[in-house]
Image (cartoon, rainbow over all chains, first blue to last red; front, side, top):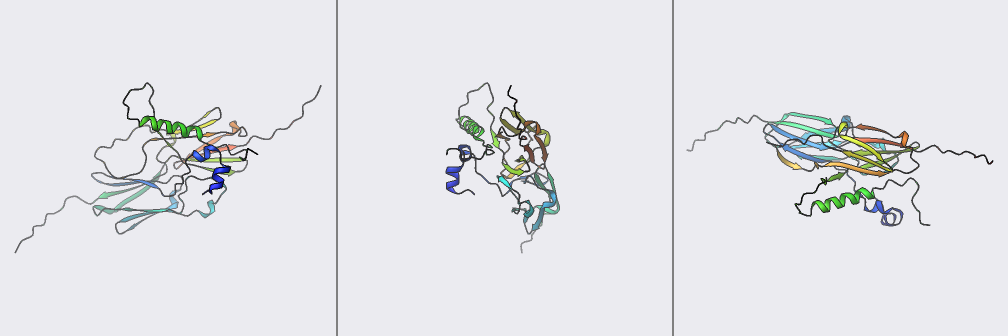
Amino acid sequence: MKNIFDIVFNSGLGDMIATDFYQSIPSADIVETDGGYKYQIAIPGQKKEDFSVELDNNYIKVSVINNEDARQAYKRKEFDYSGSSRRFYLSDQADYKSLQASYTNGILLIEVNKKDSVQQKIQIDIN
Amino acid sequence: MNNKQNPFDTFNTLAPIFNNLMHEVLNQSGSKTETTETKESFKIAAANILEIENGYQLQVAFPGFSKEEVVLNIDGDLLKITATKAVSETTDSVKYLKKELDTRNYKRVFNLSNKIDRSKITAEYKDGVLYINLLKKDDVTFNIEVK
């Protein structure tokens, strides 16, 4: 993060107006279809070995490895997901055993099927 | 001393930011008049700039786009990168429980300094990031014979 003096005196006008954003928490879409759930998490620039996907109660926890050796000479950084993690709620309707993850074009896709929707109706006798 | 910028600090994105802002403002005016040109709204792609030996590497993020959907173009001093979705995905019988990813196409423009050798620019797309290598021109000094 630049300090205020650097920003005012050493930046070009373009730098000041250009978005000084810094993305470190991945954004995600969660979609529910008739058959299951899809979690699409945008984490570009990683390798699939860099991720860990854990299931903890009703939460899917996605973590990105902290890349210490990648402390290279970046002149400007607007996105860096290393070391970040995020949890997503996984409904009880989901069959966690069917969970699959794949990484394509910078999107980590996690797919889970819904449990069989055929539910038995239970008759409760009232005494 | 006016010029505090180092000669390679020319990766400013002033022009396209204003273009995008103007498009956003005009698009949201609420007016439904038809225009002959379509005013597309682009999301500005995030970029990292890494110093490499004898130059720089731009790393521009386009998550969700395939290599074929990314176009890199040099127009004068401008390095323009756009990522356009080929087909808009149909979303019937789909319910969004969370929607954070922007479905708009991405764009990013950089100003190339004169010191960058245009003929040596290479680009590679991997896992949602376009890696562009920009190398500086070789210093050429030579004597001119005075006749």
